[in-house]
Length: 123
Image 1 (cartoon, rainbow, N blue to C red):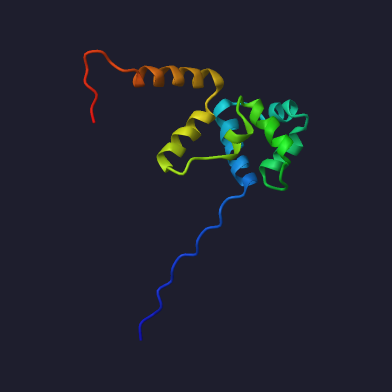
Image 2 (cartoon, rainbow, N blue to C red):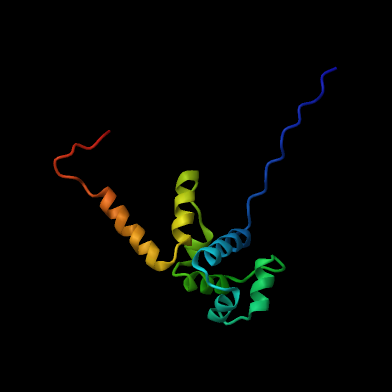
């Protein structure tokens, strides 16, 4: 008798708070801002921030918006990600950069995508 083939259970999609929490943690790590600094920027304390990041509770949209703004992003940037994995990875890394580094990256991207005189574009 053949043994049944087990198929992996599909993973449940992440909740918006899980997405936001993961992104905020990455932004904290990349920018070097402390939990206490971020908490102060949004009118909370470090203990609240620590508990939020530990997933003890979820944040309301107004608080998530304040956190996004604290990093120079919109609420949409905090909560969305593209479907294409490579694009998602690039955008994640870009959003995690400090504002000054995002400016440098944007300048480099402009330079790289500017039409070159005397060079034929490749298909």
